[in-house]
Length: 361
Ligand SMILES: Cc1cc2nc3c(=O)[nH]c(=O)nc-3n(C[C@H](O)[C@H](O)[C@H](O)COP(=O)(O)O)c2cc1C
Image (cartoon, rainbow, N blue to C red; front, side, top):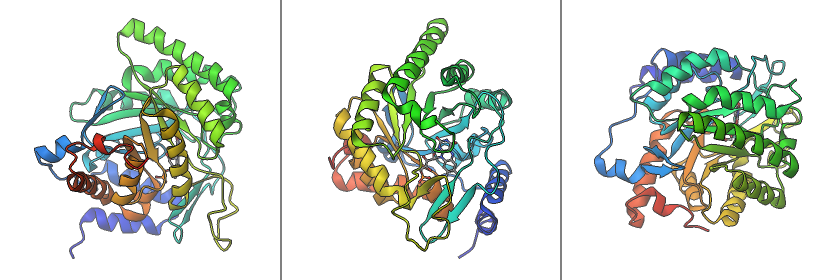
């Protein structure tokens, strides 16, 4: 089989230490070394496209937050075939994140542990690129994932700052309260804190929407480490305060699914990829059963095949996001999942993917 230049690049990238390989992958994408999505027939396009939270998604497969933290390669990702790209997490001020090493590959388990800690350039440095991408003609859905700086005690102030700066250039905004790598962040998902925070976000949105006559949906990203009751409480609060969708889920701090011999088992950070599948599915199902379609769900966590993607849709997800499985399966996974979903729709007599949502519940 003849290898294409991006496939050589992919092999090279995989041989490097994980953080360096990520930097090289971003460079390759900026340099045009990536596979382009194939053209699709009208029937396939009609099958995969959906209106979710008022936005038009040409297909359900999105790039999850954390890959393009500083909003540098959105165009390449859309061309690869992602229906949506979520950049970030972006914080108000630049910050270095945790000391290195802070990301570990678990190849046997097809997982990753990371404790980056919202390293990033900050919103002001990202804005020119964000603005350009948002204004481009040929693009997919553009989401901005927002967070707070590590040393900021007033979380509401940081999230408001982010909304005030990102709102004008986002199709949707994800409020990330579920990263395990920023001390205290997950406490913001506790009922009283969440009410306070989301009330602040809602007020910020109302003010801007009134002025601009443009309504931007807000998604809340949940942790897979919450008890069932906590998940239900959080989604009730989210619905009450105008959240338009839930992303399920972020990485886990649980390690029981890893074998004792796993070399990086005791590294602190969030675990993603295949070992997260069961937890992410469990959290998704709790959300879907509780919400009964009241809010759209976006599934993420170990989606590494068309079968796994189909399962999440069956468990109630309208949309999907990927990150870690791309490291092990390559960027071709995006097309593999999209064409696999189309095939499964045909087999089940569905003309649109939305007809499959929640069918396994
Ligand atoms: C290296 C790395 C960095 C990440 N950074 C972020 C981040 O900045 N913000 C965020 O919301 N999620 C972040 N995530 C979590 C992913 O968006 C996703 O929720 C999680 O990895 C599960 O999906 P996956 O198994 O497809 O990777 C990160 C994940 C990885 C592996």
